[in-house]
Amino acid sequence: MKNIYLNSRKVLFPALIIGSLFASCHSKTADNDDKTAVQAPKKSTDTIEMSQKQISVAGIVTGSIEQRNISSVVKANGQLLLPPANQAVVTTAIAGIVKQILVKEGSEVRSGQAVAYIESPEFTRLQQDYLTTKSNLVYVQQEYDRQKLLNDENAGTGKVYQQAKANFLSEQQKLQSMAASLAQLHISVAALNQGHVIEKVPVIAPFSGQVNHVYITIGSPAEVNKPLVDLINNNGIYCDLKIFEKDINQVKVGQKVMLALSGQEQQIINGTIYALNSEFETDNRVVIAHVRVNKTNDRHLIPGTYVSASVITGSTTTPALPEDAVVSTDGKQYIFLALGQDEDKKGSTAAQGLNFKKTEVVTGQSDMGFVSVKLLADLPKDARVVTKGAKYILAESQKGNAPDND
Image (cartoon, rainbow, N blue to C red; front, side):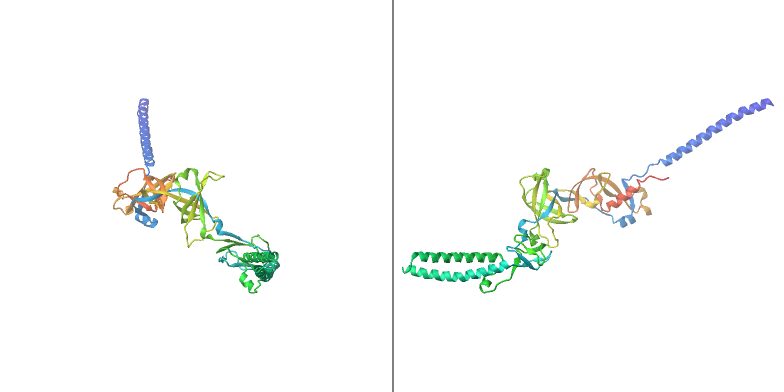
């Protein structure tokens, strides 16, 4: 009996060991299968498949790479300015009191138009002195004519004649001087000669333009050579650009310039360089380029506005795409090529769309909404490129980069 028990143990233990080894091997095989399933490679984000519905909703449009004439430009910043001849500080040549103001800030005025009136006792006195001198001139002229006649007939003395002549010339010059003074005050001497004495001095606009500032009020004192009104005329507006030292050799008189006003970058104003300064500015290493701004009827240009500019220095024919066709990510630029459906998915409902492949490019100059592109790999001659909707495709491709939660 004891022998039977011992024999049974000898048979049982090897069987248990063999069973345990078998189970262990089976478990490892299953684990390996699970790891293989988890580590299956994901689809590359360089190619993304989109259905026809996605393409339609995103408004994706494809086209071909074009050969376009792209301008070479020098970038610069500057400011709109007015020449001194288009700015005026209106003053009075005689002190007085402001009696009437005919304009306000922003008013349009014509050359020769009165912008204010000043009342002054001195002004009245000047007119009275003119009339007195004019009457006195009649008397001294008559005396001069009489003494001249006597002198010609040797009936008078030469000394009296010379005195009469001196008095006449003196009064004549005095009257001419007073007439010039009245003309500076915009008084009609012809009207004054008819006896029309004017009580108020008009303050006249020297040119047509717009009132920028009004410094006076009714009843305020008007002092000689103190500003009463500021006028500007924006028709002569121009632009000064700061050209950096490294770009000076590329910039020339006569080159065309595209100007974008600060805050209005989408609206371009054209101009032409008409002069270049011959020395650097004292504060920095820049040379000022003066740009004549083309007249524009639908834009109100304001002196002092900052601008960003592109000076067109040349042009070249190069492969180009619309700017919307190029996307940037991770510090690089890409375009999307439109490919056909995958061969193994053709005919399926889910695959009735296109595949798009992300392709790296190097961008160059931009011009009129197009940007030059340098391809880093050869493309088929009939290659189709996404020209609209590239940002949507990029966003869709980046969704696959999110980590799995399982």
